[in-house]
Length: 455
Image (cartoon, rainbow, N blue to C red; front, side, top):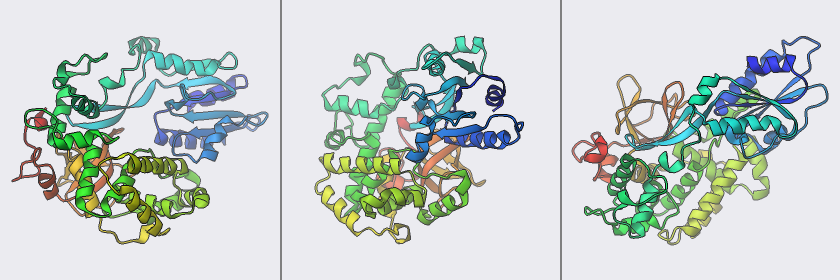
């Protein structure tokens, strides 16, 4: 904030681009800058704050491209999407804190973690280049030259930090038996490959011998990660209707930040979100939003999204993903027809229906059973794999509401001030042993068994 205000008061005309790690940081700095700019000297030029992140409505995202009125300065607060994906006219100054949120797979916990981490030297140079696209500019790096030289030269290849379950499954489907020795261009850590093999075995995709099972062959035909593919197969096993619900939820999980909570209308936005909230958790809440959006006539969806404070871009993308799954999943016979009936009969006030969500939550458990945590006496949660103490993320509908079960399922770990779990649903502990018998002991579902639990 101080750097931006100093630029605004002391530097020649030109817009400012500030790189931040995510929506929460952007909203926080935007609020601070608006408050402090009101205290500037009366002869100071106006400071216009323009945030840029995925959940913003399209019309607000376009504000970053509009020229600032004469005599004023625009400051754009953006995530690392502004590094390479777009060019912002008028930017002469860049503020680079040297950090970004990066998604990485933790072989020990078996889940993806989203955490703030230092950027690479290549990314730092890319950010500095944003200041000189149209004319000479200045980049203010909020770290020392020594720190810059200590950064990695380039961003690590994704294969070295990603969940390799899908890669290993496809190699097995192609007839590669010894995946540990397969000559990949950037060989991933052996622990990550072993973890992926263990996960596939726990999902039932591999036989005891390590060869591909018939279930694994079916999972390999799904355009999904193995856990998601197993969840969709579990939904088919749960019976009529659940498969369509699972497709909708998987589509919603493929996008970021469905709900949009603007500072100036925060109370309205939170009330709108509360109307969709399910006591069973975020997955059912997302399903309710998807159903209501799908029931709305196409021409009215933009207005519906604005009225309900959800991202039209995210809902459109989630719908496209769900449609792709209906068309492209070879094992889901008749799914498209079921989906069409479900959308046609959905109510625009879908937040009021009294659905039985247990089949959906069971289906999700059958695929994402690694991502479970049990409630502790102090109200915190301990992950069943890895034993990490976590808290429910403030964005969850269960954040201030005690779930009806002592066990939860989550889709993402997020490390900020502490370790949070996001996209959370309450599940019955007994489902773990029933739906993932190769991984959880049948006598005590809270204790994983086998090598996968200890790696």
